[in-house]
Length: 585
Image (cartoon, rainbow, N blue to C red; front, side, top):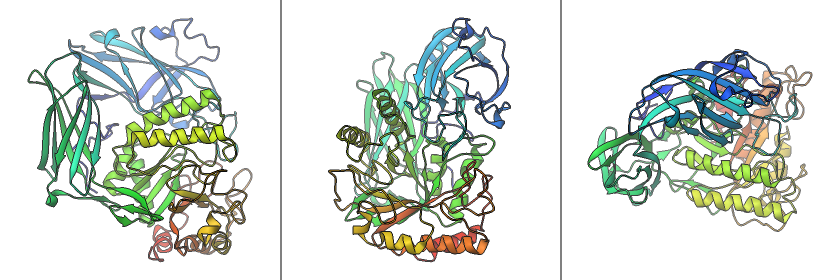
């Protein structure tokens, strides 16, 4: 494993790095506002008596926060003191990597804005209300059990049920400050062509009305400069086009992650106003003739379903090392990637996947009510997620929907199908370099990969159900009650994958409300044979382009992981690797 030149430990935005930043994680004052009186009583100015301290970035529902109260409180307040030294021509920005669901920020009582959505980075400009010396920063958050905003695996009732778990309210990812120039880089999108060596850095900037603004990109490989380009910024955008020499083209691949470092510099009137570090990978993902191709070669994906929960901290990783550990643990089992399920993971996870050469499927957390409000919430946040994550070479595809959740009538309802197709085309308009799976599991409309979920515990039944393309496309699948396509849609030669199966639990673990899929196993030997029969059944199907095994770890009452909730493997990693790799695929 080799870090990029831009890597800073704990830095939360690995694709756009500025060295001047301040981590705000730690103890904050915290207030439950169960009567929703905060605005009326001027909590925004910090005028409230806190109920307790909370350890940011953990939500009050989980033990790691220092509170551990699972009771829903729809309105909550955070307060902290920060020392600032505002400078003319500079902006002070607050970034929240994740805060669920409606977030409002004040500094010294001055309103800095309101943002909706819990799964993308939120940024607030504190400048107008900031003063030299001590400042009072207040964050008010509203959350509830509404099914109309994206919830993912968060429950919508007061107790866990089915495969839905404890809710997540408020700040659950890193909170941090950065001081930037008014004339600054806002973002960059890298577009690469492995055949020509062309690299385009599509840069967006805030020019603050300044004239003669110029952007420059310098690309390095192993510390050696391999390309550069400088151009004026026009209408706050700039496309910096570069070409790598043939000998300089190094491809990002699974387990062999070649990466390029980039320095981006903005100047106004000849004076440097901003400098950021980034990186990119040269790689191409395509679907062709029923196969998934990475850099022109067939890619057989051996994925694990990864829900990204931890026992003490819920959706929040305990620390940065926990993110890296999950990747290296799965790789030690012979698996080459994950489907991040119903969660948009901390972006540092994507960074580690990039530098280890580990595949990630990026999936939108579901809504559970097909209303105009729900549709707008999902599509608006999904666009922000795609824009935020699209530079990570590890991401192999986009998955906006899962198992018809929130779109239950998709099989026959044209209005639902039209919305799903709108999301497909919107995703493609933002990023046409990756496959999009419209409804992972079944009842696809337009979809670049056809995906199947099947939870039999018998390898023989799995093989008999899906061992031909025709069986995979049937409605319903054999030994199942769903089919591959929604009404009016048909197979057009797409790759086929089994993206949920397994879910095997030990009988000793599946007690009370704890469960796995189907009949459990009674011993390590039986567990080994069960895993082997299921994985080998998939491997034996020549039309299958890979699989996603359920799942990485036990999650609360769902005890069907390859590891327990604390990430202790149920069989040795070498034993599982033997199963995963012995077919040779």
